[in-house]
Length: 158
Image (tube, rainbow, N blue to C red):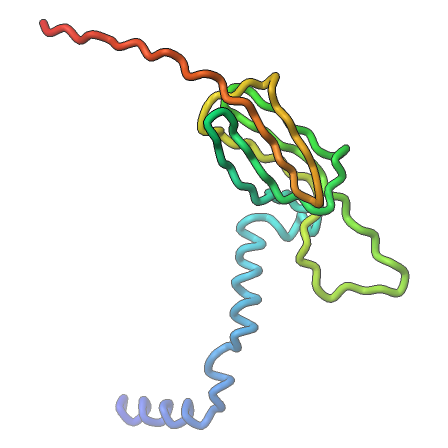
């Protein structure tokens, strides 16, 4: 009796359209998106969620250079601090107001505040920092401190 039941259920499954057997890719993507929103709490934050700007770090013989993409941020809304080998950048990108009669159907751009601290590859002189902002790109040049003389420690055997 069990094999007959299995055959009958198999025929019933084959009679269904394929689309009813598997959820659509769109449904799967929506489900995954909701899981990430719940996991990271982004749903409650909305478009004003915390974000982190992409950046590059490079160095020359005497400088450490950090370049960050910060389009749409006013220089007055940036705060930069340096301490030994730690750079901290804070800022805020203000959300554009919707125009009357204009409705968005896709919003991928991030707004809100950000704070990013990065460890630099070496100690820098916090008195010799130059920051420039042009066309949405922040460039921070920091003078390296001279390398400290390393003291060799003798190891004695006992």
